[in-house]
Length: 328
Image 1 (cartoon, rainbow, N blue to C red):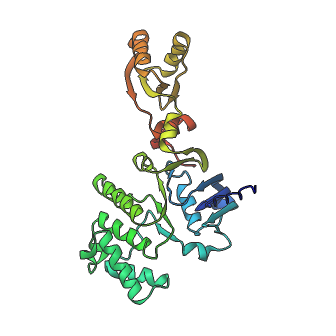
Image 2 (tube, rainbow, N blue to C red):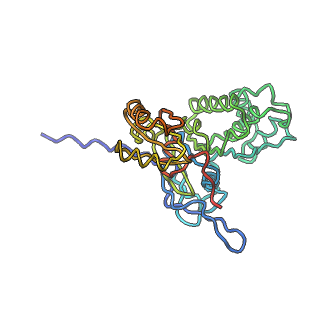
Image 3 (cartoon, one colour):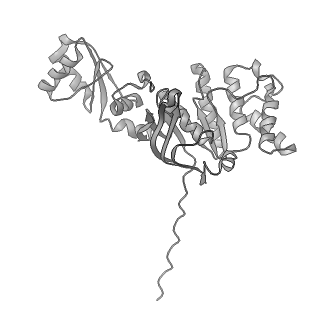
């Protein structure tokens, strides 16, 4: 009796982006250097919506610019779709769509002219280019504005045109650097709804650099970056779960003195950040009641809440995300 032939191994799909020990430094006056990225390693899978979350000055935009082949790293390697970004930048760029924090549209051209010029840069011509322009203008609901000058559009409409421009050549990877800067909350929500619709329509990997927690929450996975270092990497839910329960925040006149008393009496160790005490507990209601019963006269305010990515950042760095300062 012959033995069955071994089943073929399933092909392992390589990541869309592979980053290994990536470092970058900016050189300033008097040969002084500022570390922007410090030994970052991570992989981004094909089809992911991946977030880079960190305060301004943390290195997010530098990483986006390296992925876009606009900067060359001092140390380490970056591959995009299996291509080395340093040695084959032209091949990488053909696979990229990029929308930076500052708009890349020409206000003196019409919506249609901006897209047509982008297509010409990528070697698109004739009827295929015109069809692609019309398809994207319809998809982003700006077809009726195709003959209007970009400088006359609202911020939300400009962002739609920016996305259409970035996607004109059907890239495999879309890089977004602080994509909702300058947009009001309603337009920001519209932008993200448009992005979700887009991912359903086309196979696309998206990398978003942001300092806004609600944007990072929408991502499949999030990398928390601080002072150029990777401090956490996982799904938003997994990062919040590892804190071990709900969050208690306590405001007091003397936070350090109260922290010492809480340790002595209750055996729990609060963390002091931005002048407030913070505790994580799986039974936060009971712990809050014990705190009020034992130290009510020393507590100005006490709050309970579900953990957020802000709490994760605080636990990893000792500072709040919104208050973290960039490197001097």
